[in-house]
Amino acid sequence: MILPSITMPWPDPPLWPNSRKHRQVVAAHRKQQRALAYGLAVEKGMHRLNVPEGVIKVSLFFCPPSLRSFDTDNAVAAMKGAIDGLADALHINDRWFQPVPYRGEKCRDGGVLIYAEATGETWKGIGAVALSLVNETARQRGNAPGNDRQ
Image (cartoon, rainbow, N blue to C red; front, side):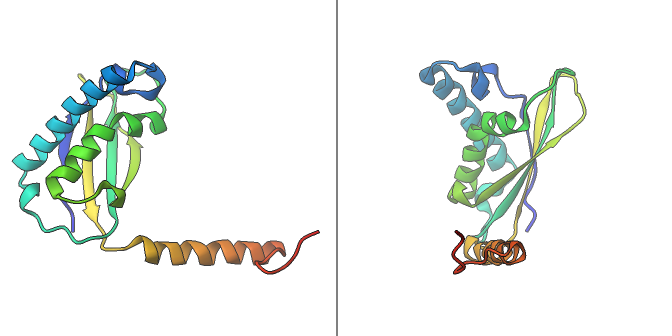
């Protein structure tokens, strides 16, 4: 199920983890970001959707206001309030969100396009696949679970 997209403004400087602002300053900006994301999501009618429980892939397209470089890990962290606001509008726990950052083109004022898709997969199913991959890699290296290495 593909959800409607929303466009958020470029994150304020205090929201970036490397800014190291006081937690109350960060909390105030994050609260504003969360409220804005919630409002935009409700505007798109997301609050009326019945999203199935399971993984929701959240694609974040970062279109910076300048050509300055940015760290995508910090960019995702700077959007924490927006992700929480989206979860609030969908009436789901944000633990199901799997954010995936993308670098977009430079745009005038900067912005972040957020696209989300509910996959219906659960972590249990994904965990089983991950465990089989880990075990297969261990077998290939000769240190499969149960083999004692000395």
